[in-house]
Image 1 (tube, one colour):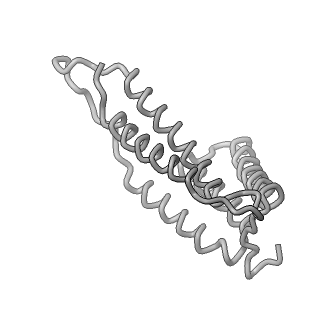
Image 2 (cartoon, one colour):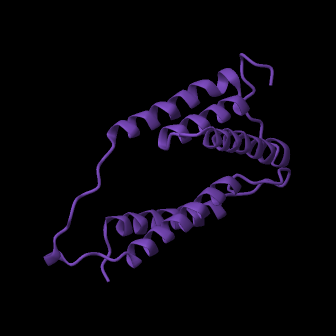
Length: 159
């Protein structure tokens, strides 16, 4: 069993996330605030550690062709899609203070999802819209209503 580039990247990210996760638990907590400063980093770093471990496991379980049989054709790189994804994230950052979290998030999730895999039927467009709306609603209620984190309202909109 050999480890490839994905496994090495997963191991590096796993080590980083575990070190930072330990550090996030060492942050001092404030007695008047129910959620301390290490709460959100701990959540993000836990997901990062789990995803990194899965990446290592997936790389270890992947069957590699023998070197004598030939490497075959390399996957096609899509730099255009990378640039489009960065542009969509940049537009999201610009739109957040202008139109607010809810509207910007719906637009962001919908645009990024459409850029990654463009829907071809009306049903697929409906699923894309439902996922974009659902993502924004769930994120809003979890952060704004449950965790009491104030999200951007938007200068152009009142909501």
